[in-house]
Length: 90
Length: 209
Image (cartoon, rainbow over all chains, first blue to last red):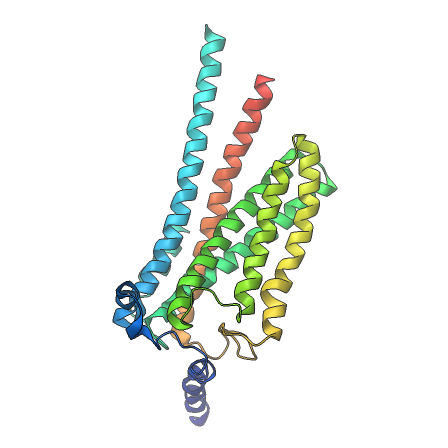
């Protein structure tokens, strides 16, 4: 009875390693980093945590850009409606 | 939905990274593509509804969904590229089919908007754009899912290595799923805002003429 959960546990641990197994020979991102520019080196420090930061910033700025664009469009439309109302009232 | 998004962003801190810390990109990069697919599926749905029943409302909804989908797709490409620099050693590689085919998919959708600008008659524009959108949406599953799985690839989740079923530490899932739901919710919300804008614009344009 106890064997099955233990087995499952071992399986997940072993399976978690397949990513490294299949990809580490092909992925050479960290190789040659010492010759890369200081910017790249800094970005790769602290176990690549700045990459995660960069990725979230990209998403944030793209969405922000989109929201600002919609905001501008809405403001323009508001102006048009106000102008139309003013013409009608005069 | 906003709560779900913030949870998706807040929880990542106490997790265990597999390879390096950049494994956390699973919560950011992968939901982009999920969200994009949902948006494009919505675009396809509204395009078909437009062809079935030519009301301008459906054309507006299809255009909005495709716009939001493209935004998320571009996010996915950019985030994938920055991740690739630090895991594969290059910003862009032609050895990676998924990367190039997803870029191709984005180009097809950019063409959708280029096509829309080519017509002045709204009915004609809506009809041709809807037909093109049906074509574009059918290419996406092949470009993003089927072909990359058949080819040798650098991307996780190809070459017989499932992206998610076995390799991922189970605790990542508890953050990944809320993140997917959160980003989809965000996309739905953006969709709604843009749609309401377009409806109001349509009404004021009608009033003026």
